[in-house]
Image (cartoon, rainbow, N blue to C red; front, side, top):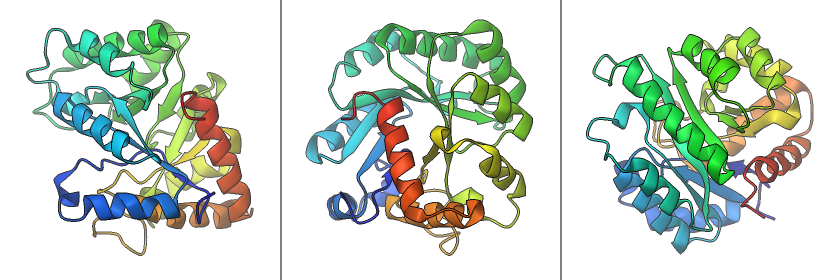
Length: 259
């Protein structure tokens, strides 16, 4: 077991902020964490994520088209995803989802069409999804309540309401929590954290973004997962070791290609 016994279930190690020290950092993470999942956002990052996972035994990949990266998406994107998913270290389809925050993104109808295709692929391939939801809570709930059944996955950097979390939990979905849960202005997230069953909880960093306190405003990295986990342990009045053990069990329950 690693120093912390934790997993970072969402880190963008392909980001150019890691160009100067990526190899050194990735090597060090094998001592600090049990593992890291590196989701992609498009074709280039998917190839990179798989290549990185091949270099380091504790790093895994997810493949998918992020809602901010749909311009120019290839017509055969589903076939590309299916081919990548054959790789033994590709453990999920992601990062996928809906993002209505940025006006320059493709319109909601286009986002939903691509999302539904990727969720259908999750079902076909028996892989979980890693979901991005920004300012799209209503359509997200519509999709999972009425349009897509028989899939499993995690809502990364969960930002919805407690009421939405309760509905998603009924469907067996997981919730990813990272650095934002340590911010003073994130009481809504902490309210959700205090309710979510530990059996549906995952930790993440979303590196290089959203570093936890005391690193807010600096480059995030997967080693900082420990700061989020210790903050959550204090919030829930439980031991850090208990949370590490449970969330690692959750990783292997959801991402079944990880043994």
